[in-house]
Length: 116
Image 1 (spheres, one colour):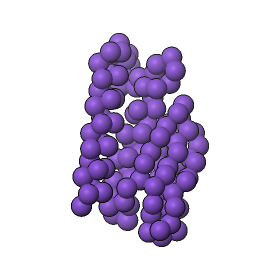
Image 2 (tube, rainbow, N blue to C red; image 1 turned 30 degrees about the horizontal axis):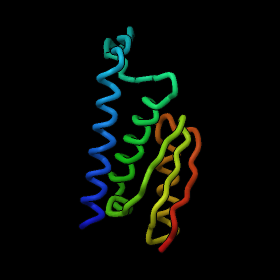
Image 3 (tube, one colour; image 1 turned 90 degrees about the horizontal axis):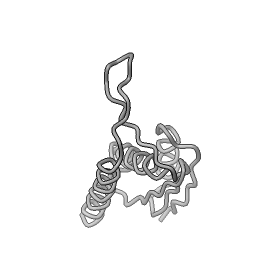
């Protein structure tokens, strides 16, 4: 239960940080083909994209029934994602890496998850 609460707070923190970054940036252009606004944010140091990538990875990991109850930490720098924490099985470790690698914007995965 504590892991779920901790992950919820971490997720809320990532979303809050992303919201703060987005509120201080100019709005993106409107996509001429779909008419939808371009919500991607690019800052000089790449941190805006990194927040979006971390949020997307966290959302994808939480959506997986095998991983949603685990405390997996995520750090993203210029599209390179580091995972750390503990998982119960090698299969969970590999699944987390596959999901992360498949997430849009991820360039590489540094999987430092440890099997308990």
